[in-house]
Length: 73
Image (cartoon, rainbow, N blue to C red):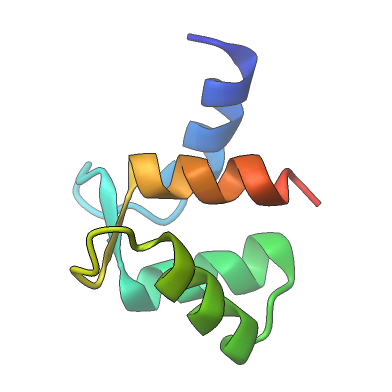
């Protein structure tokens, strides 16, 4: 596993429940706020942008796409 993938997983796994590799919108918004300092409106925008299949769930793949754009800043 690459260092990038490990970093992505480390952040994502903090918010996973029951080893399910996706986050409900509410969980993703908390992640965006806690890990990236986004306010609620910014989090909503990012969720809408990166929830590619528009199912209200952020998959690990969708989060990885977000992370590549945001980095760890």
